[in-house]
Length: 305
Image 1 (cartoon, helix red, strand yellow):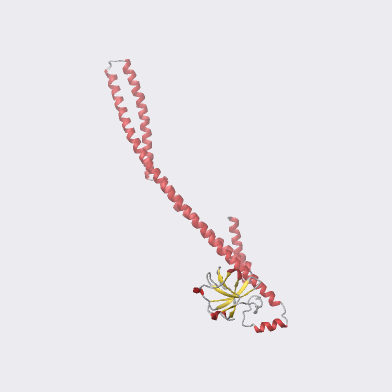
Image 2: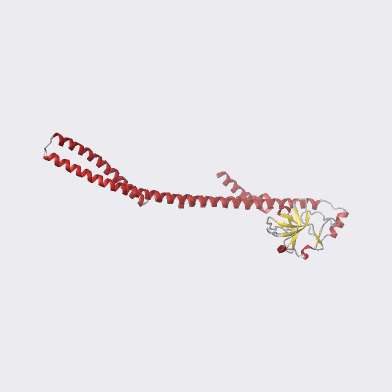
C-alpha cells in the first residue's frame, strides 16, 4: 500500500507539472493519482466503520452487565459446590464417629446438624445452578445474535468498499481509454495534415467543404452508399457506450441514441449525425442496426449531407 500511495503522489506531481503541455500522460497521471486518493479515502471510511460499528459493539457485549451477572452466578455456584463437598466429608466423619460411640447424644446432635447443613447446601446449589445456567444461555444467545449482526454489517461495508473502488477504477479506465483514442486521433490528424495534397485531392476537398474535416476522415464513396428516405447514408447505428465531446468537431452521444453514420475512418473514428448535430466519435461506441425503432425514428432532415 505504501508503494501504491507513493506512486499516486508522484503521478499527481508529474501531472500538475506537465498538464500545461497537453501531454496525454500528464492527464492520465493526474486521474490515476486522484483515483487512488479516493480509494484511500474509501479504505479509511471502511476502517473507521469497522472500528466504531464492529469492534466497539463486540467489546461492549464482552463487558456487558448481563455477562458479568452470569459470571457472578457461576462463581457463586462453584463456591457453594466446594462448600457442599466439604460438608459431605464432614458428615461422613461425624457418621463414623457416631457409629464408634453409639449412644453418645452429643455426637448424634452434631451429626444431625451437619446433615441439615448439607441438605441446605444441596437445595441452594440446585437453585443456583438453574439460575446460572439460564443466565449464561441468555448471554450466549445475545452474543451470537449481536456477533452475527456485526459480521453481516462488516461484510456489507467491505462489499460497498470494493464496489466503490471498482467504480472509481472503471471511471478512470474509461477516461484513460478516451484520452488514448483522442490522442491517437490528434496524432493521425497532424500526420495527414502535413502530407502534400495532389491537385485531385484539392479539387475533391473543395467540393466537400460542407463535410467536417475532423481527424483525417476518408473520402466517401458516393456510388456505393445505400439510400434511406432519399438521402445517402452508410448505416444507422445504436450507441452502446457514451461519449462526451472534448474538442470541436466531436459529437456527444449517449447509450440508446441512434446515429446516422456517414463515414468510418481507419483510425477508429466515425463521422455521423445525432439529434440534429454532426461530428466525430469512436467507431467502437456504436453498433450497426438494420433500422431505428419507431420511437427513435431519425428525421429525414438529419440525413442531409
